[in-house]
Image 1: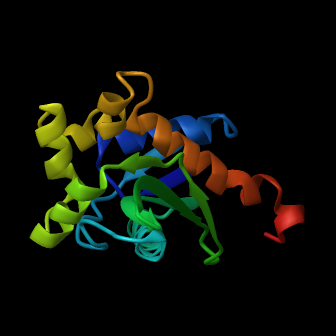
Image 2: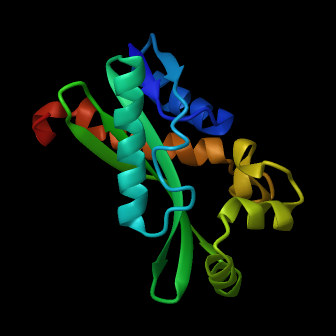
Image 3: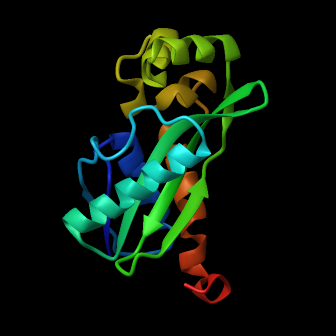
Length: 175
């Protein structure tokens, strides 16, 4: 099985590989740079979903394969609480799309409001808090905040596994 992936981020690539390998024995991951396809810092579930879907479709159009996968991390709010979350989109050559989410975790409101007012990305704040350069390509902010118990790879695997559900139960989902 060939999976075109709209990222070159090592943590995301490993999470996608782990998710697909749970269900499909022979998986080839074909990374595609999709940097210019989606917003750098999506806000809200709609922007995150649009970004993940655009990345998946772009990767499939460039690399071909059985599926295209896009994973978009972003920030959304429920009331006064900001959350970091990842959304995966999986698309097949016919254009069918499935979506899945990772575990979300809260972020400090004041820091996020400042981040938004300055037009900065979460990655910059995460680097300043963790002291880790390019933290998003490594264990991610979640690795720092959970004291090493969870990584960005884990979150990517979660959202891709949940996005795979319709493909694993095509009869239930009409795929």
